[in-house]
Length: 309
Image 1 (cartoon, rainbow, N blue to C red):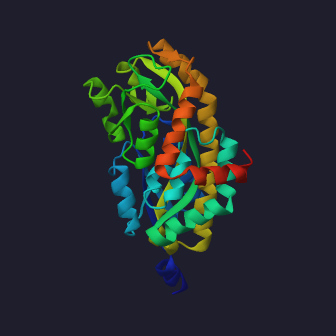
Image 2 (tube, one colour):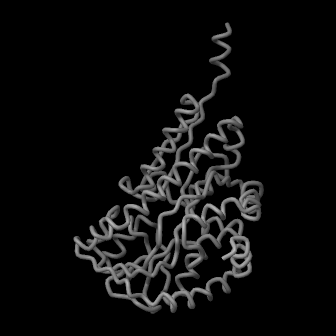
Image 3 (cartoon, helix red, strand yellow):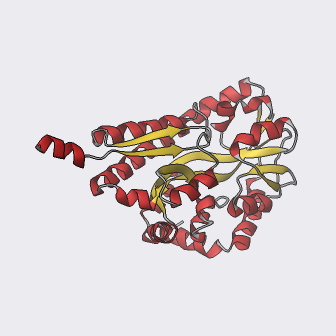
């Protein structure tokens, strides 16, 4: 009877985790490592099933579903979370921070933790961790770009991305991540702003000629689940989920940093040209307009003071 009672009380929790990147992107392997370690530490009672290439749906839809208590997770960014808690949008502001070390310091600031808690309590979105960094985003185009100028650049559909790209002189075109290749192929856009790892993951050397090293965003990602589902987990499982998320995020971010030189060499071998003599001072100056338009300048400056930048 004790054995039967134990089986009755045992419960398995399953999270379906969605991301927009391809199966060869370093993040996919990182998410799988996170899933494996969580399963090991919980004896298989907490399982994460990882889905790449938006197999479960587009990012915005997944976030709305997990808010309703559906056991889903999503790799997302501060720009999208800024639609709920405005201050979090600063994480994807142009030229915000410039190193992984600064990202980890931000995660420990009480003011940032307060925003994260507000996101959970008021909007039902629980941030598990946000130390996943894809690296710098650059303008990738079919013409060299050295200064801010008018180009139709694909951006994600969130105000922070849109206003930032507009401030940098380009015309933002909101498209889902999975439509970038076809839009470039059809010349519906002049380019996209992406990280180096996106190029081999999507074979973008087939439709793009230049990587213009504008370094306008250090792409910080947040791993989120629904607060309702999260609170159903035993406390020790919530801790394991967080700890292994941070661990996998740090490892994956370091791997991306280490692989960038190899990817640069690869894209050049595939015929792309890297434009490194970009007027970064001009781009940085233009970027200030985005913070003013978005009402995030004071937020950014306060975080800088906390970081002692």
